[in-house]
Amino acid sequence: MDLTPLPRPEHPNPYSTLDRKPIYDSPWIRVREDRFRHRRGAEGRYAVCGFHRTACGVLALDAEDRVILVGQWRYPLELYSWELPEGGGGLHESPWEAVRRELAEETGLQAEAWEPLCFFHPSNSSTDEETFLFLATNLAPVEGHAPDDDEELAVHREPFLQCLQRVLSGEITDSLTAMALLALQARRSGVTGALDPALAERFFQRPGEHPSAGRSRWQHLGTP
Image: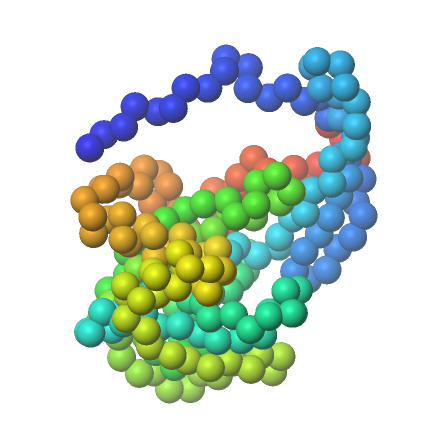
């Protein structure tokens, strides 16, 4: 079913940026503070968190319709989390290249069939992070990969519907995992919104081939 695009104002951006100031930078995240004026008269400061890497995840299903889950301690939450294989893609790799690497490193598996599943912004009030989620099937073992030396991972296979129940009960809380499971359930239920072809291409392109408006702002700090 083809959908008519949702309405948007003729002039959607109400902000005039007066300046942008870098606050913090690390290999993973960066923070800046923008000074702005709103067209309704308000002036203020907006803190933006940017990610150097592209968020990628894969819903890998085995022949018994079980989801491959990875368990690990999530430092910011002080909680143990079960979630999909996921990680950050570098500037010189596409989301597909990154998530294939993550699947192998975290689970010792490879997949024969890959397809884009879902794209979303996980926290658009404070960060420019983009997330690419894949569906992978026809799994097989792969050797020669291991987690990073700051990772302690467990691998578990859980039936798809039970994973979905754990998301809805609040036991699985990782946003990439929840989105991927709900997206596949929607597809299986007949909600078949196909990805825009230009968006689907981005799953297999490197970030430099499709600079987003939000991430491009980091190249112009200090100027509107």
